[in-house]
Picture 1 (cartoon, rainbow, N blue to C red):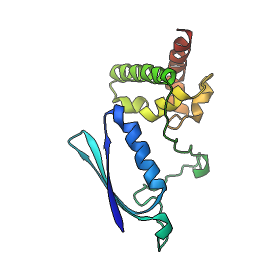
Picture 2 (tube, rainbow, N blue to C red; picture 1 turned 45 degrees about the horizontal axis):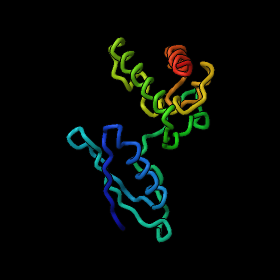
Picture 3 (tube, rainbow, N blue to C red; picture 1 turned 90 degrees about the vertical axis):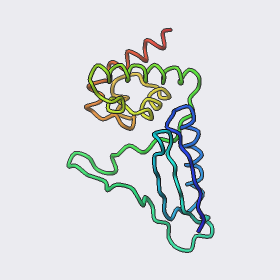
Picture 4 (cartoon, rainbow, N blue to C red; picture 1 turned 90 degrees about the horizontal axis):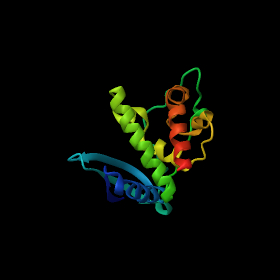
Length: 166
């Protein structure tokens, strides 16, 4: 068994690249165990115990630390939106993403909520990269269910349409 450490900074400038590097590594090995810890509110330190996928001698246990999936009568596991692939945004999409973050932070201040309760960065990145033309399109974005779409969909559409007219 081998081990490898990763550092994922909390600052967004480096985080997407570092997460993509970690994800690429995880796809190529058989993970046996992992540990993660936040250090000084600056970065995640992640320790991964693994075997090379080709030399793994026993079955890989998927999602060792994944929380149990809760099902409601209205939703089935099959209806869950898949986790998005790491996105690399074009300069135009990056501008949209920054506008969406600015709106999200202002809205969070108005509502007295932490920004992630309005929308997570990953969701905003998906929106910036997607072709959103109507409110219903937000339902295809991970993190946006009917309630969030009803509450914020029109506002976000206005931001996106204002950005495209500039």
